[in-house]
Image 1 (cartoon, rainbow, N blue to C red):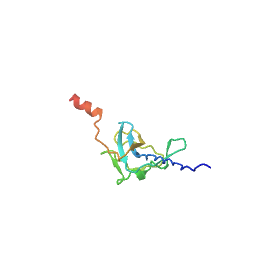
Image 2 (image 1 turned 90 degrees about the vertical axis):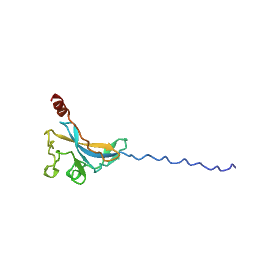
Image 3 (image 1 turned 30 degrees about the vertical axis):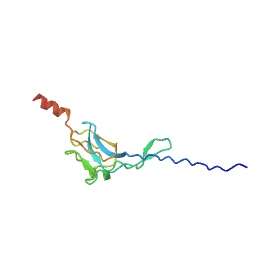
Image 4 (image 1 turned 30 degrees about the horizontal axis):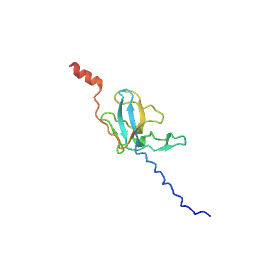
Length: 126
């Protein structure tokens, strides 16, 4: 009869956690800039095919765009309490429709100052 041999256990491979979170932003389609950033993270879930699927279905609602959990660019404030569900939201400055997007980042994104080309061309002409 042969000796019993100790079976070496392979260590479990630790899967790295996803460090980037998805933050909702409001994107002005006319000026091509972000006009608002929310601090409320959108959670995602991995499907069986390996693709990510947004878990909460109400990711674009007025609760993410309150004074205490979001930051608007100066002059671009939008009051979502007066909007009706399904209504198209327009940019307060240029009047173009806005997009609601998610931005992957490890920290809460910050809005930076943007100087638009139209303003830049006017200052060069003077």
